Amino acid sequence: MGLPRSREMIPLSAETGNALDVSNTDLMVALDETERPELLRELIAISRQTFGFFQRHMIAYPWLIEHLEALPRSARILDVGAGLSPVPVWLAHRGYRVICIDKAGRIYRPPARPDWNAWGFFEYGLVHPNLAAYNVSVADYGPTQHLDAIYAAGALAHMPARARDRALSRLPGWMLPGGVFLAIVDLVQGTELLWNGGPNNQVEPRERHGTITDILDRLTTAGFGIDEQRTVVRPNHFTDLFLVRCTR
Image (cartoon, rainbow, N blue to C red; front, side, top):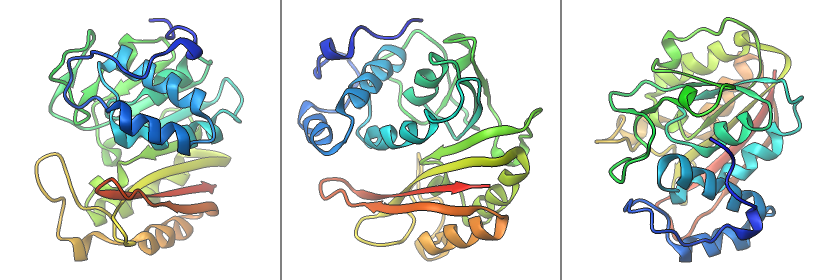
């Protein structure tokens, strides 16, 4: 599968047939807010071409790529809880080797169908030779080679607190010295509480699920240095976002 046509020609609207596809109104707002609208347009096109839709919560993905594209093009990268994301596909087409892990009961294989959603396991290896995908949890996975970077786009908020703490504690041992860890974490709007929603119900009670401080404490205890942290307030969405970049 090749990359979509020239980003200048990518229309915002698309008759994808998927009810989850983001509206033009929301995309216009996102394009106004991002510093790299051309990259967001490119990710929109990749997502629609590969999965049949682009979800509104993906508008923070350019932030991930801004940090990952600074790595050498042969870098090995792990996507924790990948779901259906255009980021691994974008990276693979530029020479990065990306491993996607996600434990899910529903399996998605190309071509896209209009009933797909983000809660499932996608066979990324069928899309590009630089991609590999394993239907396993982070607790059951172990890389065969050390990694240059690891990222989690939304996955941390969907893990129970104990599982999340164990996962974050394991990650430094999988990485090369100087390796980068990036996370996008959903927050309960207007708070520092981690969003406790899941595909079918709550992950666990909100008071047990944790806060921004809990994640930062676990990262520093695991041996990461915090390089960047910020909250993105989204008035027209049910969650805000917490973005954090760390170095091993």
